[in-house]
Image (tube, rainbow over all chains, first blue to last red; front, side, top):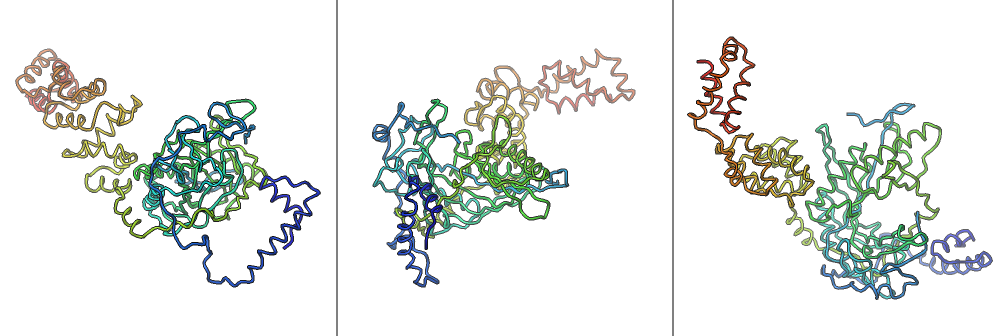
Length: 95
Length: 484
């Protein structure tokens, strides 16, 4: 499967990755190789096989409904590039 | 009752589907042990899982699972014993992981139904498509600074149930009734507090219009509407807008819109072109959620009596009118209060008091049942005083006012104000004799056939006795004396 430049630009945008125009061609080729590798799986007949969502045969372990974390805004905000009081501050985003 | 709207080119039908987001009642979040309490200091209820720190793993909260299953059972829905959590990918500053953990193709609850009652007394069954569990996002504050947005992650990761209806609703009234009924059921179940002002329940409303019987029109989704009244207003406006657009030669674009509560209009959110490309895929951190049939069975047995069943019981077993029963069961607190008052008493009398004087006083005071000074026990004692002849209905209403103001018991107020009804025939007779003697001309007119004057005599005697005469005794004696 080959990808065109527009598709690569769209995927990059969705992933918030900056891909300069002059590199779109190269990235399209690289991504195409990855897809081609994965596409080999299409050769396997999966008729009647339930999709596998996990590699281990087990169900989720359930946690008791207890408050065991939180109460430490300093820890949560430690890496914030900017803060005001105990809020994170980010560039203005309004719809 | 027709739901069709008249346009320039004839009649139109509105088609509505709703997505209700209901915050699950639980102590801790869906996938972390941080607290969920409303109104805490910013970022004080955030675990490193909620903040999406690298390497942190989600562990699901058993209570949230239980609440979702309970809600499914309350909506007569199919419970899926195996469900899967997916990542819904999008970027927004209040979503630290860059994805929301949600359920896509395999939700925990499948198809169900909910019955709505309409003003004309009819009822309709509305299909539920599914219910799934997902994480709430954090909160963005845009008004704290001119150039920045502030982020509080306390709400990030709180468990939500998204409940999706079939596009079965046909009017703003039906949509309003659906939301109100959903809220009532969730509150009966104790799975969501239904507090729409605090945002614990909000609805996305999908609206389209079509010619009756024609193919479905293009729909618009009105996001985050947070009251029954706003849902109705938003639908009324949006349907009109779409009809005018189509009749004017235009076409409806499928888009997300916001309801401006101040101006009563919907407006486009102008979402970016890829906004809806969520690229769902199964969350590799979470294996499938598998429920034991016994787990679901046990929850089914513990299910409380829900509003529809309660209403039927009130009508069938207690002899209430369907209207009174409907009013009483809408809120679980009202129904519980009524049942406490009616216990061991005449149910219809209790219903009249609760839906009449009591609700009116509650409204005037702007209070909740828990806050109001007249408890079910106290109201019951007042009703007993009417039943045993101590108070007339009229006096009882005065006593009730006093109870509402002071919080005292009926007996205390009766004693304080000397309001006890007079059933002593001697005293009543004496008062009647005086009134007859003082109004000889009117007595003559009455006896000559002017029946309307009867009320005048009753009023005069009551007035002379400070309103305390037993009305039954007064009537008997007065009739006898006047016809003598």
